[in-house]
Every structure is written in structure tokens, then in C-alpha cells.
Length: 109
Ligand SMILES: [Cu+2]
Image (cartoon, rainbow, N blue to C red; front, side):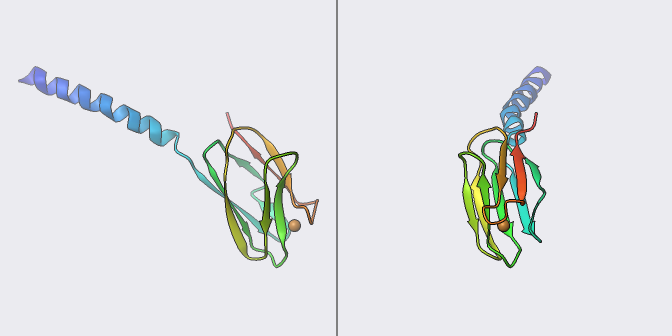
């Protein structure tokens, strides 16, 4: 009887493992707010599957535009848009209307 209970406990613990692993790798949401002509936070760690929520809190239209290929998100005043990260890696981005506005997405270790 004791041995049987012990086996049940081990099997139960093993069955839990995949769920623990899965939640550790779960996609995350990252909010990047534009206020007073600045992306904040300007540097965000992302990984494939994560979602970036771009929020323009300014009275001006902005964009979040990747250098090279990637994304070009149009952000009218007081709007927000969601974008799913499709692959790991680093991307510098800027605003097409205000090139001094810059930020970076990168994949952490
Ligand atoms: Cu802008």
C-alpha cells in the first residue's frame, strides 16, 4: 500500500513537469508607450511569440518602424496597436515622422 502511494506521487510529479516548463516559456506582453516624442521603455527584451503593445499617448501621429525589413506600425494620436514578435533577434526602430525618436527590441540570453 505504501509503495503504491509512493508510485502515484512520482507519476503525479512527472506529469506536472510539462506544465511547469510550458509556463516558464509562455509568451509575454510588453507595453511601449510614446509620450512627449519618446518611446518608453526604449529598450525592451522580447522573444518570438511575445506581443508588443504600442501606445501613442501624444497628440501627434507617430510610427514604430523597423530599420530594414520588419514592421511599420502607424500610430495616430491616442491610439494603440498590438504586434506579435515572430522571431528572436535584435531590431532597431524609429519614427518615420521624427527620426530622432528611436528604440530597440532585442532577445535576451
Ligand atoms: Cu513620431
